[in-house]
Length: 416
Ligand SMILES: Nc1nc2c(c(=O)[nH]1)N[C@H]1C(S)=C(S)[C@@H](COP(=O)(O)OP(=O)(O)OC[C@H]3O[C@@H](n4cnc5c(N)ncnc54)[C@H](O)[C@@H]3O)O[C@H]1N2
Ligand code: MOO
Image (cartoon, rainbow, N blue to C red; front, side, top):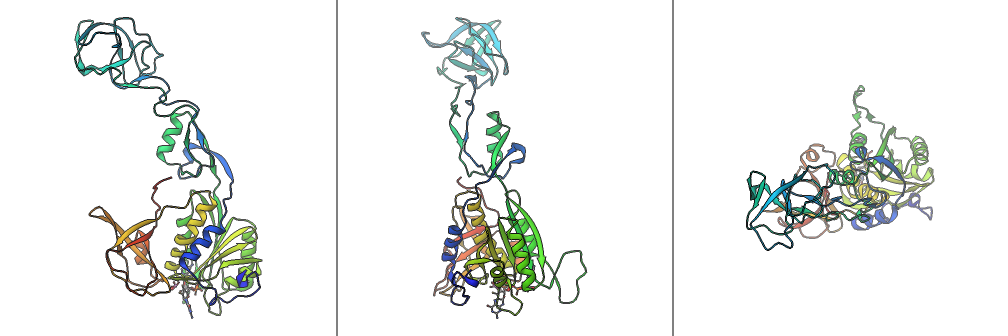
């Protein structure tokens, strides 16, 4: 690893890369894992389709009435109005009937169109005279019929691989009679929080200790439905960290650590990754917060070392871990989302700023409001935020009204 690297040397100062370079490296590093399982549709919400789905039947499955009314045959007739005797009736669910020549056939919405009929007249547009049905003048031939296959042709690919299953997909698949789908197996992720100061909520808190929030945060941010998270914690100890990394790398697809990434005496994660047989592609990123961030591989597992400050860990997870997970799950990269910033912010030429922002739609435009104050240890700005704004480095401040990329906490479903 470059901790560590393939040449056996490590100088985090020399290896700092730009935010964009690190993003490209994360995308290039991750390879689709291509492991699938068949699950019942009811358990498939949010899961990613492993293969395309071809329609085993057409939708609608037969020509059917789109309105409650009367099926008639207009072709070959001189014109309307018509007065036709009532010849039969088909309800939704009945097998298709036959339109007796020169009659009107009562149909309900969804009923199979009787053979021989070419038009359905809404019942509001007829006058009933005993058993006679008088059809008004402005009837359009062919009206109110849903044609077999007009929505889905039998055999067509209705869903592409890589697509998340949502309510609309569930409705479509069930309409096609499909009960189970092949989906990508959830990623196995170990979140290893490091730090001798960490305690779990519920435990007594000695002076100088803090409750672990990064572990539960990352489990919630990155977990179900497409990842299973194992949470562990180790003290600031090189051997214990290396041992935990080696063990977890043998068990999971992705190991994420928090803290221990900076230059303090007790920051052991990069060296522990090296001891565990890993290598690092990226060791430091020109971003704030989140500069002491690294990723690479330990054995067959991917490895991401996030900084300890909660905002820095969240920014690293949103900017790098989420896109890596999409790649591992076989999904296309998420389309970038931009918003107009409602604030001015100073910046530096050589680093990307990541700012918690709340999003709203103002005069039809997605607008980002800053959630401050500064400080990557702060929790409150993240609670009032919806996204992280990506402010590229520059020698001039970013002015209000500038359009910038935002990384939403909850990824909206736009496109595939
Ligand atoms: N001399 C320097 N000091 C620091 C630098 C630097 O460049 N030179 N970078 C600073 C930056 S930026 C960050 S970010 C932090 C990152 O440090 P580490 O990744 O080594 O993390 P720690 O120092 O262990 O912890 C930082 C902070 O976060 C708290 N923490 C850790 N784990 C958790 C957790 N699971 N839940 C909640 N909070 C956690 C920890 O107690 C510390 O307060 O380094 C700066 N220092
Ligand atoms: O990455 Mo640090 O969180 O900038 O303070």
